[in-house]
Length: 383
Image 1 (cartoon, helix red, strand yellow):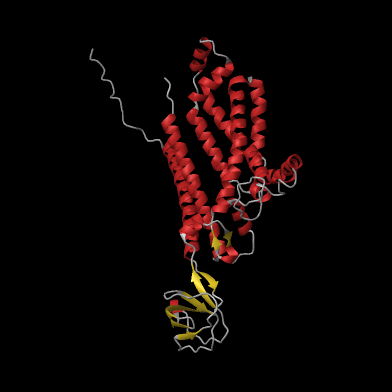
Image 2 (spheres, rainbow, N blue to C red; image 1 turned 180 degrees about the vertical axis):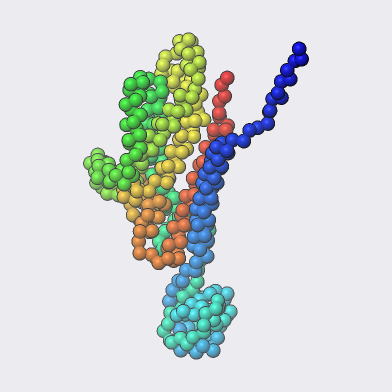
């Protein structure tokens, strides 16, 4: 009897069109998110570039002393007012000129500069001097007054960090305490009740939080500390409510980090005679440090980017102060106020929004990079 020959096993990969389609959809989703981020960054850079290259025209209080024809290159000016140095760019009516030489009573200029048309000008017309916002002025200036051409972002940055610091002083201990209770102490029944309540707290619109800060927290602070100490609009009430807002985020992420710690570490601590509190604080929390640090940094990023609470409760004017009970405007609050005003498109006030937004973007990017470094540095692997 001749043995039957078995058929060879086909080890080639079989085509799976459904799996390939799912993989393509997932790839396109990731690519779409990257393209959106690139588009946001492009618009921020474009607006910020326009802000730093947009000319500011400052009144020199030095008017023309006589009528000037389109052919004249010597402009008689009155001696009073601000000096105009050689090389400066000036504007008389709608014509832009470049100063080649200057004395107290006369300017020698290049007419029709930057494609403008030389035109006659009458005596008494004011001369405006061109200025631009420099990076040094932007990052070191202590006054943000667009009406006078002062664009120092320090008051906005200072208020943003003070509000975020107050928020973290509220959210971090409260959120970590909630996370420890849910992961180490709460029964499944209690956990099933508290978790949805935290999610509801996280889902409340931020504008409601803003009015809560303005109508409840601020009057409470003024009643406790006195109306002379606490302004109606202040950074303290905004920071407290922002902390309440980000507490569910801290609690949820911290609980996930604590639950990821293996049960064997807890049992080993109990076997050595440790109490539940000692085990939670001295074993579980240090073992989950990387996840907790990531949760804290994400919460800080969320607090820095909060808009409606600070717009309603913190104040509506830049103010460089370290007193949390005074009114001061944050970066996001300023963006909301300016963008909602009557600003002409492509004006320097309008483009300043993009410069502030770019600073916020880089702050958030730096915090996210720090979070990844901390997670990679302190990650614990258990087998």
